[in-house]
Structures are given as structure tokens and as C-alpha cells.
Image (cartoon, rainbow over all chains, first blue to last red):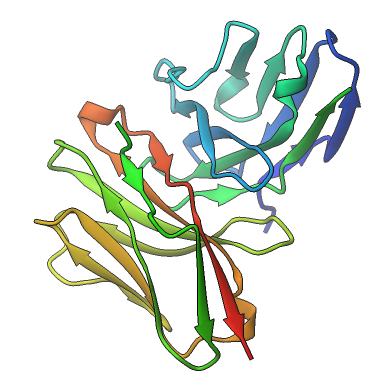
Length: 113
Length: 116
């Protein structure tokens, strides 16, 4: 069956540009997470969607970051006015329910020049 | 305050020996879950094992077992009979209940090197 799909797999852009990262979770999974992983580091929580509840945005590092999840399925993470420190791998994960193991996508490697 | 602490940035183990990767956590929520994930050099995150806070027995999955000591708030991962393919980053994670908003937080990880 299909796993979590993220696109693009790689994104190179200039400082100051806006970027959109997409995540297609596993069908039927109610929970969706975004994480950021810098080189050699752990996973930094960004945002969490659970069903129709208001998302937990407590991990977003600044107001340049936003995310939405349409129809309880696909999610888009948007970074406005990108900075060099935004360079990282952005990982999306989904789980059947909040207390179930997460299934991760392959990530989007974002490089800001 | 760190909610998940992995104190071993790197570990070495001889092939076929057992190794314990440490994880301590901090929560006041009575309902929580603990997870371990493996991240090989290829980058994908692989779920290994889960322990619920109310589970009476330690979780086991094949060569993986979780040494859950609730009073000490520790959830160490034990890998028995290490294999070369076990070389990877290992992350401990905690999902809190209501007080933590149900989100999952990851530790900084431990890089395991298995020697032939």
C-alpha cells in the first residue's frame, strides 16, 4: 500500500523566496505531523493535526511558517521569506490515531542559498 | 526543560553482542506512550517498538525490547545480538496525553555503530 508521500524531494531556492512543501498522508490516518531535522540533529516538532481539531502550532519557529491540512488529508507547509537557517530536511508523518506509531515520508531536503 | 533525554550521542557495540540505548523522559501526564525509531544513513524513519504508560509488561519486538522503569522515568532500548545493519541513529520519542496536547516529541538521538 502507499506510504506517506512528500514532494518535492529536494528544493533549492534563494533567500527571501516563499516555499511550499506537500505531504500526502496514508489514507485514513487522522494524525499528521511536521518535523524539521537539521544535519546530524534530532527531530524538531513543528505542527500537529488531529482530525478536525485545531492544530497544535506550538513548534512553529516563527510567523514565517504556516501549515494547513485540507479535507483531513493533504497538508502543505509554507515558509515565507526563507532564511538560510531554514535549510533542513522537513519530515512529514501520519498515524492512524494520535497514540499509534507514526509512518514517515522520505522528507523534503530544503536548501536556501 | 527537556522532555526526552538521550545522553549517549554515540555508542559502539561488537557484532552479536547486546547493547542498551538510554532514554529518560519527563511528564506529569499519567497517560503517555513511548516510542523508539531507527534512522539509517539513507534517512528513512523506521518504527521499532512502543510502550504505553499503563502497560504492565515491557514491550518486545524480535531483537528489540524496551526496559520500562516507570518510577525512574526511563525507557531504554535493548538490542540483542547486534547486526551490522543495526548501525543507525536511534530516536526515543514520547507522546503525552491531555497535558501535552497529544503531540509526540523526539529526543536528540543516539548514533549506534556496530563493529564486525
